[in-house]
Image (cartoon, rainbow, N blue to C red; front, top):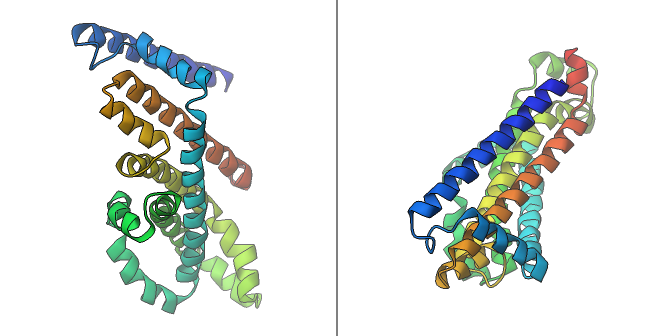
Length: 254
C-alpha cells in the first residue's frame, strides 16, 4: 500500500515536471507576451495572495458555487427519491427532465440575467441548474437499482414508506448520491467560472475577463491555476466524505 502511494506521488511529480519543462520551452519559442513563462506566472500567482487582491474574488466565487450546489443537491435529492419511489411522480416528471437535461447550464445565463439581473441570484440559478441534474439522475438510478429481494423483504416486514426509505432505500442509494454530488460540484465549479466571465462584477471568472481586456495573460493563467487547485480541493473533500459515509461497502466486500 505504501509503495503504491509512493509510486503515485512520484508519477505526479514526474508528470508536473514534464509539463513545466514543456511550458518553459514553448514560452521561449513564442512571444512571451502572449505565452508567459512559468516563472512569470508563478510570480503573478504569489503576488495575488501576498497583495490580498484575490481573496474577495475567491470568496465570491465559492459562495455562489456552494449555495447553488446545495440548492441543486436538495431539489435533486427530493425529486430523485420521489420519482424513484413513486411511479406516478416519475411519469409526470420524466418527460420534462428529459427535455431540459440536454440544455447546457451555461446557456441559461441570458435568461438568468433577464430574470434576476447581474449578481449572486442569477449565479445561484445557473449553478442550481448545473448541480440538479447529476444529483437527480444518480439518486434516481440508485433507487431503481435496488434489488427486488430488498423490496420484497420490506413488504413482508410491513415497513412503512418512511421506514422503507430510512432503513433500505437511502443507505443503498447513498453511494450513488455521493457520485452525483462529486459530479455536480465539478459542473458547478466550471459553470460559475464561465458565468462570471460572461456577466459579473466580482469573482475569479471576472478576473479572467479583466485579464483579457488588459492583455495580461500571466494573470489569466495564474487565475486558471487557482481555479484548478480549488476545484481539486472541492473534489477531494467530497471524496473523503464519500469514503467516510460509505465505509460499510469496504466491510461488506471483505
